[in-house]
Amino acid sequence: MNDETKGLRLEDFAGQAYDKLRYGDTDRQGHVNNAVFATFMETGRVELIYNPADPLLEDGFSFVLAKLDIDYIAEVLWPGTVEIGTRVTRVGRSSVTMQQAVFQNGKLCASAETVVVHFDQATRKSHVFSDGQRAKLEGWMQAG
Image 1 (cartoon, helix red, strand yellow):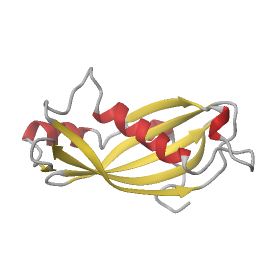
Image 2 (cartoon, helix red, strand yellow):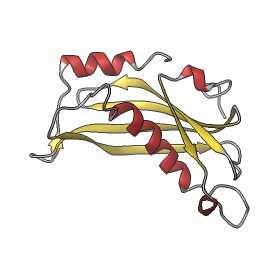
Image 3 (tube, one colour):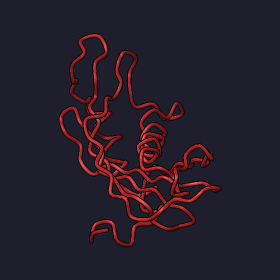
Image 4 (tube, helix red, strand yellow):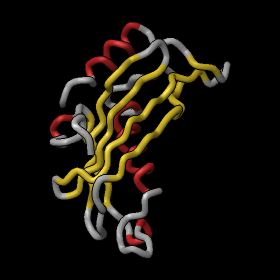
């Protein structure tokens, strides 16, 4: 944990998602396996950027993961749930940097820096954000 993540709360994030832990998520140490944290981060991102009630993308476009850097802070234990916070920290020409965090029972268990790239499925290349997309992404820099 560093100064940037110390004191983080779920309420600090524009995007808030939840995931139920599965017995199969655990490893020999009895806690949730480190690989599952990437799935938690994916859940948080997807619920924010692919929200059908508030669409960000046009048909033919998607996001591809360019970076996922996870700091493991505390164990996550089964049974139970986790809460996942996601917020935008930087909007580039065609990429978005996000801060994400996983909480269990209000305790910070992991944080991550995630970068996704706006992707044109026809050309298979990055694609510049529109002004409307940029405004929406910048709005997700604030807590929800």
